[in-house]
Length: 420
Image 1 (cartoon, one colour):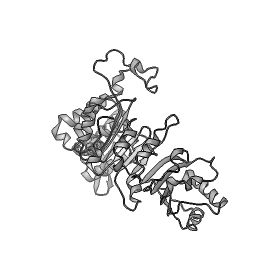
Image 2 (tube, helix red, strand yellow):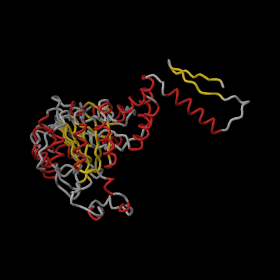
Image 3 (cartoon, one colour):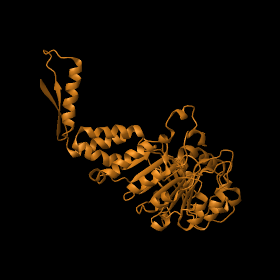
Image 4 (cartoon, one colour):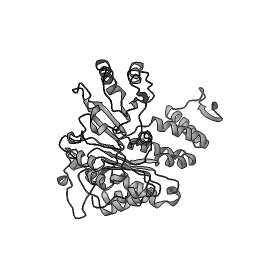
């Protein structure tokens, strides 16, 4: 048997070439090649393994991103996590590097996964010291009283969970108990900067969960799917500068929430203009509101009269989705020469898809003639949006009724009151 050498940068990789004069079964050939490759992969330099891991993460599959939430980030789906963790068997270098990649951001969906992560973080001092979990998503938290027994199926109120075959599963394995959520937050709290939690139903916060979140001293972003958002706004109104929300047809929670932030809000983001702005607030004054962002415009409104509403009087920057609203603005500029904008409006920012350059000279020309700067940017994070304000702030609240996300540079603003 001879060896065929392949060169990649400074490393050398060898694959076996079978002597054609020697009789050998196909299964043996596969095993021979597999063993040879495995042996060589285990001795790759650290730099090469890091490059391979970076490539694998770029090609991996992620859970869907909430485009309406500028604080949301990508998380590997469960299959990708499992496949990547198996690569630890390739050798010591792989075993030491992979946890740093995988456990940088993690989404947990079941009690079984929680128990596994708890074991990894809590039982091995050597391994846990190499793991620095920064972003955590606990998806599917529920409250299960210890006194409950028997089938859990009869106690489920979420229609999405009442599937025909649900009762034939171990239902509690598909959920995360609230006490377990508190434990996992406590375990990784020393390195955690981003925390996202999603409940299976309308439940409150246990004191131990609130206390666990309070103890995360490095926490910068908190996203909570809950109905506690109105009270949160009323309690923390002085520290919330950016508000993103998507109202529901059956509720009107946005009005008291916006009123609580009337004097401090600097940026607002909605899905649909002008429908998502409460009727009773359109002529109210928001003295510090500098940025307006939306994704869509209702085509039924032929003339954008909402530009003249009192709520937008102080707006300086307008951010919108290019693919969804560019045609609307182009038509309105052509139809109405005297289209009125807020007097302080100085920038139009059109958000484009990643790696998709746009050069819409016609649209830019319409705006430039009105002395409004036109920019085309990729998706902006909440911090980039806030930096557009003259005096940027680091506080964020994102709401989806309920989706709640708060970012604060001050630890005091992150202290959540247990009485939600």
